[in-house]
Length: 433
Image (cartoon, rainbow, N blue to C red):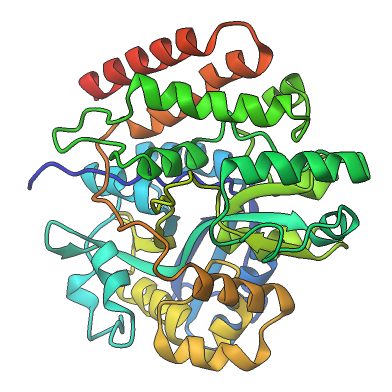
């Protein structure tokens, strides 16, 4: 097999951390002859509610099969999964992202689905782009739950109080960092609330910025593509926005570096009027707020080179430890095709990749879900192509970026010093990966 790479997928997952939540079937007692399927995902309260409801429905529709669910917050999920891999007791079906997927393929934790396609697994109405995204070295490994992209969300009430009208005072699908500094300061002056979170330590924003500068994050040989000038410029831009009073103080933002809990977003806590996440998290964020959210793309440079991408929000995959892969893939098939099941899931994990599902959901979308669909329509033609997956070690590079960026937020070192340090560490990480 040729070398496997990965494309960064590190969400601001918005998933609650803590102990594993497990729900067994709420139907008749499972007997030895019943087929058993375990499904494990990272989640948040809204995702967990929907997924457990799906499990109940699937079990009621499929006597003789008992699916059970397990969920954790994003960070704890992967720690638990690593333990399960080492112990040889992974669940049958796991949730994965576009980036980390390839590491799990490389270590054999997830297995190809090709033998089940056309039998227990139906992908006949799944978008080809989604199938391609789950295919590595000619083998189909991952079933897309939905598509998403980077999204900025803002508190419409605070923007209105500041006299900011989207489409007039800024274009949600094409505004600059200078625009963000201006409207962020305007919100702070009018409401007392900083206009935006500080993305100095936000690697997703940084990844967009690299693309906006016309550079690939990873070169074809697996080395890092960002230059000293690009790293310095990115942090300097956010320092300018911070100095304009448009963000919370640096030390406050430093305390949130790398935090993946939706409930900690500035727009949710009321500590800022604008936050940044993946579009599939809009529904969960709106569920934590009374004020109505508006949406926009990430900020851009004046050149307006596309930086954000559209990619699968999450996949479901079959693990090497599945005791009944036919039953597991039949459940996976229903998860993306059954119209009763997908009605429960809605758009919480992103825009579905199955054409019939999208059509069936449209009339009954919640306001937040309808806004998500509207956002996807608005970003058409304004996103960058999906890059090949980056090399092993890219997750560690991301974590290093978040860690060293704290020094910038705290003013402990100069931006050039921190940029040099980050790039040296990134080079070393990728060389040994």
